Length: 168
Image (cartoon, rainbow, N blue to C red; front, side):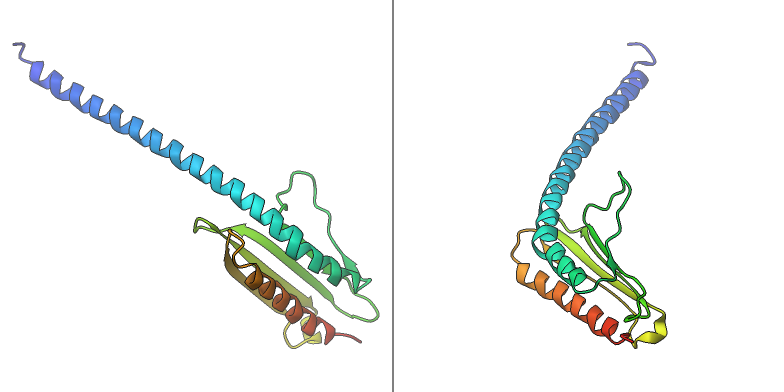
């Protein structure tokens, strides 16, 4: 037997073990990437449904009640697919601005998404509550649609209560 045979066997074994571990890690990473992609597809489908069925009709109705609202247009390629933004401009009737944003976001917990509702009314002195931000998590299976509706309805009503206090 060659004097370095044990050494060569040791090195070859370590390399083979490392290559096997790398192949296993690569397969696991591929599995996680596929699972994440499936979650992303499911999220996009549910977020599209929630936005179309619940958020957009409510924000559109709110906007129709005030001639001083603007829905900003975003540049092509900007990632605003699951966001609704409504601006209330300064007017004779309302000497302030309002900024309302609804965002549907991925949630770290699989099978869930989060909804954020934020508003700001400026200048701050026109109302006693000029800013609010709330976020809540919902399951993606549609089982919490009633809770989702209550969340958005309460958030919009809260904004409107404070916005209407600014009426001149």
